[in-house]
Image 1 (tube, rainbow, N blue to C red):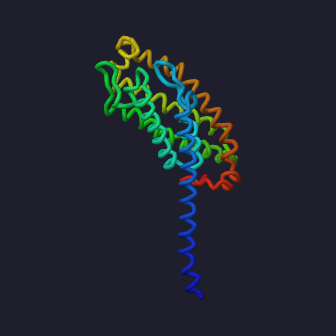
Image 2: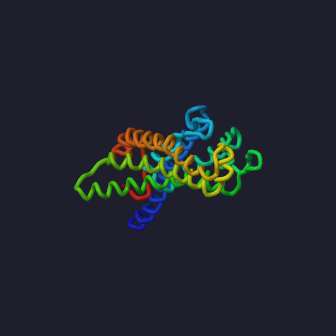
Length: 238
């Protein structure tokens, strides 16, 4: 009888692990579907501004990172980058060459730098917010407090948005400063000033919106009883 019980335990553990894995895949698929719907719905995920596109697609990636951890967040960040790659290839703007190697303007064309710009910042959008919130929770516990950290949610949202904007714009300067200057009819010597203006006009409002939305959504979904009811598990267990 004792041997029978011992034999059942690994089987039960395997079944529980499989169930958790399936739930995780379903949750990731749901967030992925949200990202795809937003990305390919006009004026929702990507908002054309002529010289660039504003976006709020980082918000579901940030929320997913907080709920499910940096691994799944990074996967969804990659999906965010993939939608940007497809959008800029199939429906280009004047500066789409910085996001896809399959588009060119005159003598200026994309390349390996386009893929780095398109994917690396977006993957980090799905990773860094988790650790920012984790750090906020650590300091919260040091003060003897528990529960959802509102400050942590705001910081996570702002971080996710800014890492996207700052990395994208600075990598554009590194890889494509001359082409980007030509596409925007700006002198090469003034291109970084132009980039800073885009960060201010476009990036700062995006960060504020991301912070507010992450706070509003996260205050509900990050509650322990809600996460447990919905079956959300992250990699570090907060």
